[in-house]
Image (spheres, rainbow, N blue to C red):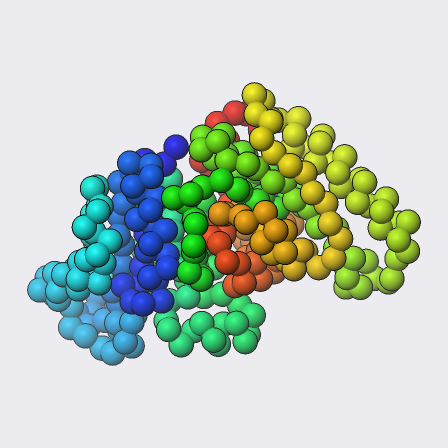
Length: 310
């Protein structure tokens, strides 16, 4: 299923958790792993000077400097590289999100793996502001393959892969997320947990609703899962269906902990909108920031379905 993986890294400690998942995936799938670092942004035009993305310092760029960065990357991931069998280390100059997307398209990558932040100081600030790193946002928006984001240490992850949670809101984007999760679950014989959270917050429904109405919405959601998603499932019965009420991101995280999820799969956005214009949805944003396991953001149907979703 995965032949080529792109690990977008700043080659700094904030990407260590993502690095471990990336190397695990390479070994599990016998895939090619590309360790890719955008080392700096040109100060202007074709200037020989760049602003280093890690330090913020101005550096003069030449072949020796690029080689030095690549050697630093080898040193940073030396322990993980010992067991790696098929990898490439590349460093380029440019706007990080643009170069990552260009590389993914050029290589026809099956997956992009990255952390949710690019700088160490961003972690606390990002959680305080409740937004994820801008590079990750832009990559998730533009990527034609799923983007797996790792923001915290992962205990089981993909080596002991057994439980996939896919959150759905029945949008077109959620169809792609479900298709990719279903395809992955079949390939690794994992248990697929289809989950929907009925949003009962006042912002979502405008007023408090009674329990009878909430239970009606829960039943309607179960029917939608059966008709909208499970009708596309063939030769596979290792799945569960759960519908809860509450604040969507809170319920997804609670459910993922309950089933000891190795991966949460969600649509990049929920509204019916051109993927090129969509911003990262608030629910998946909150899940990315708080999840104890990797979160896959799926924006497009590319690489999602091995069967016709229609």
